[in-house]
Length: 504
Image (cartoon, rainbow, N blue to C red; front, side, top):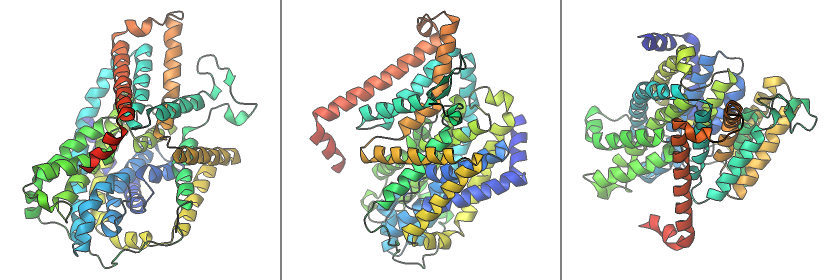
């Protein structure tokens, strides 16, 4: 009952409502811009959350995530360009429906399917998070260290085809996390005489550089980037599906809900994986599989339902254990840490109003996504048609103003720009960026608990094997890394077969 009370307070709170409205609107607009992913849209707002109340800040960021997952389907359907990675599967049949003059129907299926998926994911989020978090109450310093190592081991699943590069990126993130003051002794490290580095390199600055600035640099290097993108029609009108249509498509929606729930709860799964799996399974179980790729309604609603389920269930491991499994949840975790909130089991005890308020805010955001999505189509079409230089300049201005507003520090701006260059170089050479963010976010947790565990045992490392929870987590981490390494070896031995496989 306490959770319902806090959730109701959030739903009826004007600041939270305004945060949800603003977040969903910005998320839809950001998602509609090709190349501006949900994580980038969230990162752009992150500096502006410093002076907001904690609940308002996290609801704002989570609402951007919700809105961006729907917004990505708009250019996917209209101009065959997915606004987000998870909307890539929607292109296949959504654009075919647009070519047939049924673009309004496809947009309606995306909106309704996304709303249903978001609400279903929210139910799972609100029922699974606390039981999972309660398991972590038995965690000791060795167990927390092992949990951090398990989080780092996820790099293997996030670096498909580039395991070594992923590990290098993760180590780089851990190295950046050591800059500043030692968590145990208080001695300054790697500051090079710069007082600005005594508190370390804030992950917000690195996130903005790696995600936003690097993306701007990459897009500026594209050919014909100065031209606007023109949809084939600017007169598309949203057409919502009838109840009879939704009932006919219930199997595809169910597949999207189930696979979205599974992939979202697994760190490293993500909306794009869930969307393509849902598309394939919907075709497998469809009564009309021959329509897929030719404008199938099931081919639109299944992936859109799945990636919106992920936008809720991906928050489960973040809230339960403090381990982000995707770029977007890493940004959300940053929003918690900015306000001194550490996701995990104690958050439900010390700040239940934040957790259940977030659930209430997400409910509001999903309802608002449906209402706002029904009226924002025309502005989105106008926005998609703008020349990229104007859009990129506006986004860069937002980055600079947001960073400078945090501490009025030019040094912070320098860090953001340097991180942007590093992120751009990593992209050019095929290094995944999420492992770096994971290493940076989890670095303090890993190092501090490692040091505490050794202090307790006078430097004896056997404590990590004597603790049952620690041993189990380390074994899981070793298994994940081992399986990733085996997959990488098979890929290197049979490159042609593995590259040809998706064509079948």
